[in-house]
Length: 166
Image (cartoon, rainbow, N blue to C red; front, side, top):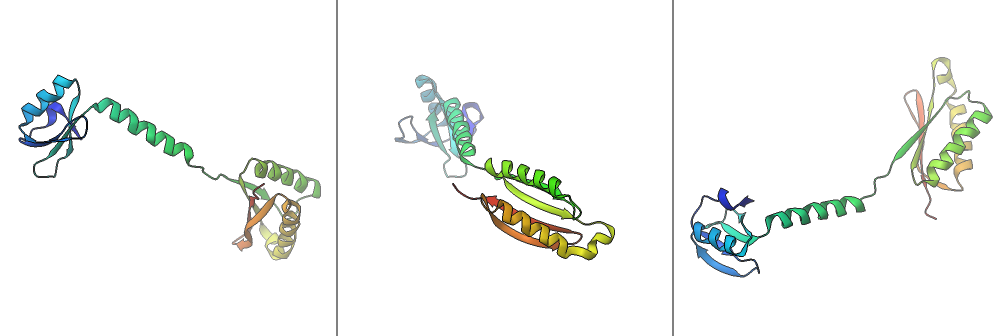
């Protein structure tokens, strides 16, 4: 969009401040009409033949566009994924603490990804890791549903749960 002095094409198709088509006029006449009203002449469609210009308050229009963008961004809800890392040799008490943290995340509406990391010879016992993941799932099953079941990926097992709608 071009405003007043930047419009170099003449003649232009003019639309006045109340959205009525005035017709085809010279650019300097359109600029004069806009100044008389105290508004701006804005080139709306530069590729049309002749280009279309509108008399409007350009600052007010920019402000409204920014507000619309802000409102649309407010309505967007981004889902945050929180990760909880475990090891196969984790103690029961330590696992319970991590599960409590998962409950807090789920209460706040976050998705939770449980990741179990295997090192060295621990890789030989993936079935133990799947058992721990199943126990975790049974525990958080009250407030969450499984989105991605426990799955082996390289030297780790991952599982994602999401909060259930209350």
